[in-house]
Image 1 (cartoon, helix red, strand yellow):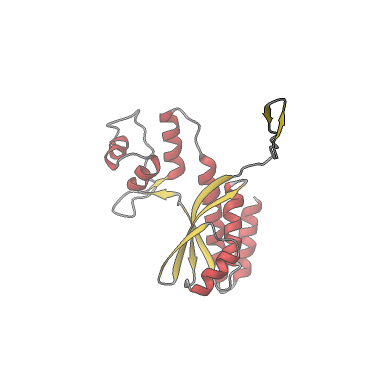
Image 2 (image 1 turned 45 degrees about the vertical axis):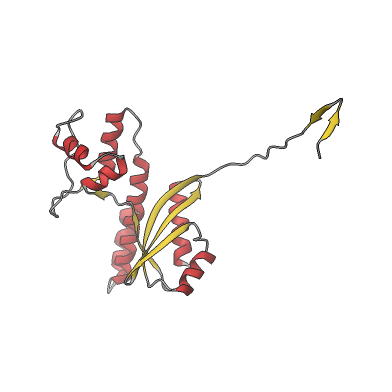
Length: 197
C-alpha cells in the first residue's frame, strides 16, 4: 500500500530478476494419426505452444517454443511429442533445401527479386549454385543462401540454425533407418563410428 510522506506519494517497486528466453519457431512432421485423445495427451505433455494440422497418417506441429537455445527447444518438443504413445517425429522444418519461392518467403523478398539475384541481374552476383536439379525447380542449401544474403546485407550470418536443424534431421533419419533395418546392429555400430570421428 503506498504511503504518503510529507505530502508526496512514495511507492517502492520491487523488480524481480527475470530472464526471458528467446522464442524459437519450427515445425515437426509426426507419424501417427491425430486423434482427440492424442491431442489432449500432447497438450498434457507440454505441447500447448504448438498448432496442429493433419494429413492422412501424418500430422504437423508448428511450435513457437521458449528455450535457452534452438537445440533445447527442438529436442524438448521431440521428447514431449514422442512421450505420447504411437507417435514418432520424422522431420524438423524449415528444411535445409529450399526452392526459390521459399528463399523469397524467408528473406521477405518477391519471387521476381530472388530470380534476379539468382541470375546476377541484381545485387553483387555470385549467388550460390543450386544443390540439386532433381526436380523441375532447382533447390538451394539454405545455409549457403543465408550466408550470401548476410554478406549482401552486411550482417553476420545465422548459420547455427541450419546446422542444428540439419544435424537433428540427420539423427532422425538415421534412427528411422535403424528401426527399419532387418539387422540394425551393424548399422548402429557404423553410425556410432561416424559420430565418433
